[in-house]
Length: 103
Picture 1 (cartoon, rainbow, N blue to C red):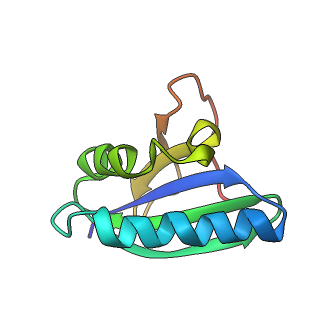
Picture 2 (spheres, rainbow, N blue to C red):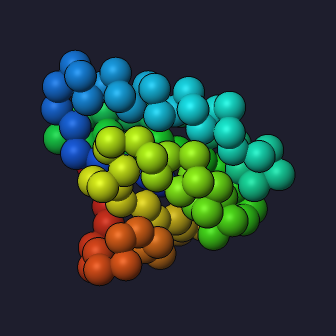
């Protein structure tokens, strides 16, 4: 897989963590393997992330939107991808986001 797609939300509480795990589990069920492989999560520094390894980040993100857009946390979602070897992210969501990083 050439890219890593990062899905990110604000997160600080145990409830946030439980929601992260539920979203990750949903993606494990719903994301077509041809578009990406869910490769874990992290939680800390006020944010929570789900990582997807993919060769097709735009298609994988479309699948993520289909799977998660009805979830209550979707309104806080941020998403970006980068080549595995690179440091700079290409922002996918929301369209108005100007900076993306993983703490």
